[in-house]
Image (cartoon, rainbow, N blue to C red; front, top):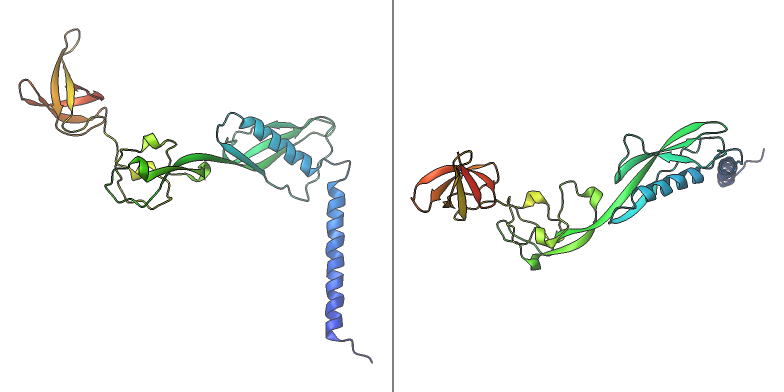
Length: 244
C-alpha cells in the first residue's frame, strides 16, 4: 500500500479549506446583491446622508462613520426612498444611532449605529509650564483635536486662557482644560468696589476695598474707604457688592 506524503496531505487540506472559504464568500456576495433584497450599502448611504444634513450647521470639521450591518441581515427591497429619522438616543456628535424605515411593500425598521467625529481648533500648551505660572500668548497655541475625546472640557480661544494662572503643571502639547486653571474671581482682594447699602427706594452707594477674593453670591469682607470700617457684603457682580 502506497503512503501519501504528509506535505501532500497538507496541501490538499489547504486547497479544500480555500475552496470552502471562496464558496462561502461568493454566496455572501451573491446574497448582498440579490435584487429582491435591500442592499446594505444603500442603507448605510441613507444613514450617511441623513447625518450630513443633521450636522450641516456645525462649524467644525465633521467625519461620519457608519457601522457595517450583520451579513446575515436580509431585508426586502423598498419600493420608495428609505426614510431616516432620529431615535430618542440620537446625538449630534460621538456615538449615535439612526433609524431607517421602509413603508412598503413589506414594512421594516432598522436602527444603525454610527460615529460622528467632530474636529475643532482648541488651546494646547506650546511648552512645558509649571504650577503657579501665569499663561502668556507665547505659551499656548491652537491645535486641531477630536472634540469627542475632550471629556474634561477645553478652550477654543487663546484669549480665554492668557493671563490665567495654572493650578497644576502641564506638559507640552497637552490640551489646556478648565480644571488646570485657578478659578478666575469676579472680585479680587485689594480691588475697589461699590458698596450698595439700604433697602427699598432708599439706597446708598459708597466706595470700598475688597479684603478677599470672591464670585457672585459669595460673602466677603470689605473696608469702607470713607469710614475705614470693615463690613461683610455679598458680591452682586464685578465691582458691585451689597451690605446685608
